[in-house]
Length: 459
Image 1 (cartoon, helix red, strand yellow):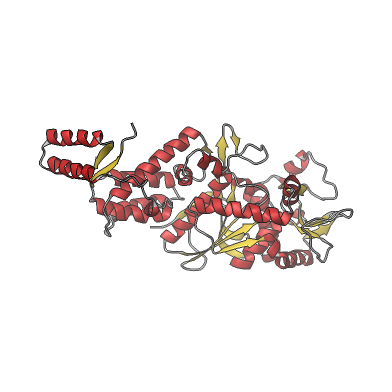
Image 2: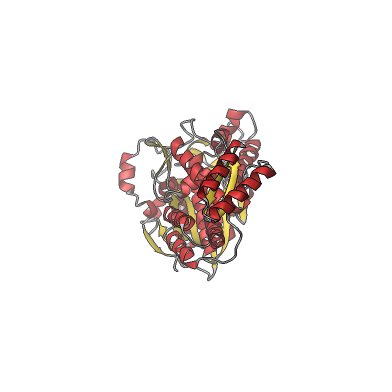
């Protein structure tokens, strides 16, 4: 059963085959830790976690690397404005280093709440300055850079295929540019190293062969991914907004430095929509995972909502949709919990699930297979073992969920056992009488193919 994934470079779904047999290098662009992550950001990390779990499901050993951008990401992705860390520091009154530590911790908490697998490596941009400087020096030696009064820039005119990932029309971009180029030679040129202002001191700045300053955002990921995975690895991921600028620039500088496009597959998760707009921090009204929790929504219900849509489709967020996802997840948990334990797996269902998830991570179709399994007449213990295997990919953490603890009186337990015996003897009137007695004690009894379940009557 082959794995097929969509490659943004070739713009088609193609068969995945790792560069090194049985091993996969996976790099995912992580957060810029100047503010909280919003649930649109987190949708991308859920997609990447699904990808990692699917690779493991297909018996690959995955070296998963995620970066933390704690310097160098300017307000505009196109090297305009101030550093986001400095801006966050000014907004909060904390130092840039404190800001990075605070929002990194908040991001990690969200990461764990969504049951995302920890990467093998978290790499912080501020800890890889020597690698970035070495990278820039190599580009300089090869003639791909030039200096201005505010920094060292990459000369995109040296590459005829610059922007191929996004299919950029450089001439049209240049003609339609609405901002002054300053000393930049081209609208598409980008900063490798920015100089600190002569009349002020930044909180995050370092010495370099070109002067005191800080790295550009794009050089960080190319240097860190190559440090851990080499200059040619399997998969590079991020959000769809990375395609036109950040990832196009990563590819350009890596082609110039190492002669590769960095990754064999480039994969991108699509936006979460609110109304007709994508969710973003610039509007100031973004939703955090904490916003959902404060409304009594389990974070894994949001994960379920994201799995119900393909990662390459726009997902419209609504509270009604999230509540429906929460209801579906709860039904799945309760059903799974009351099934007896077993080891035998139904491989017909598991293979159908594998077919769907291996078809470019089609999680919505995979969930359809899950519910067909739940409703099937296969032995309940076999269903549980099969669903457990599926959940290694879905990451809904079914094994660790427990129903709310409610002490059930022995008298009610006895009535439920008597009712089950009456049902087995097809004494339906007696079973109904006992059900009403159970209800009179404040409990409901639910029947399933695997037995019965008592729970408090909320009415």
